[in-house]
Length: 86
Image (tube, rainbow, N blue to C red; front, side, top):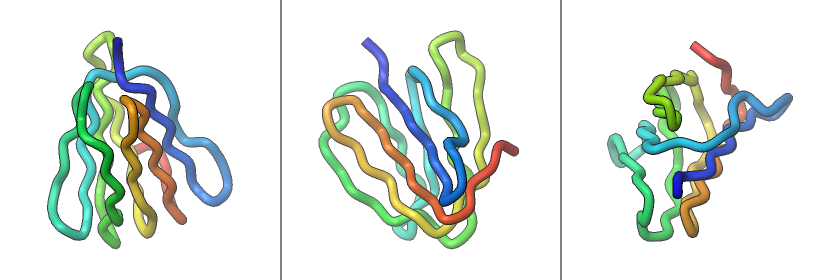
């Protein structure tokens, strides 16, 4: 099983799919999410990146700011005011 990831901005879905790992910059520092992670809700940093490693090992980098990250039951949802593929 993999993580199910969805990254959206105010205007569009930026990236979605299955991933083995997600790393995001929050107001508390970087957080890494792997399968089986406990539920969490975190505020994204004012400026930062989200790095998603997909099932094939490719790393997708998204510039994301002003939003939040939610993890529950291997589902990661990232909602940002501004987000775009880097």
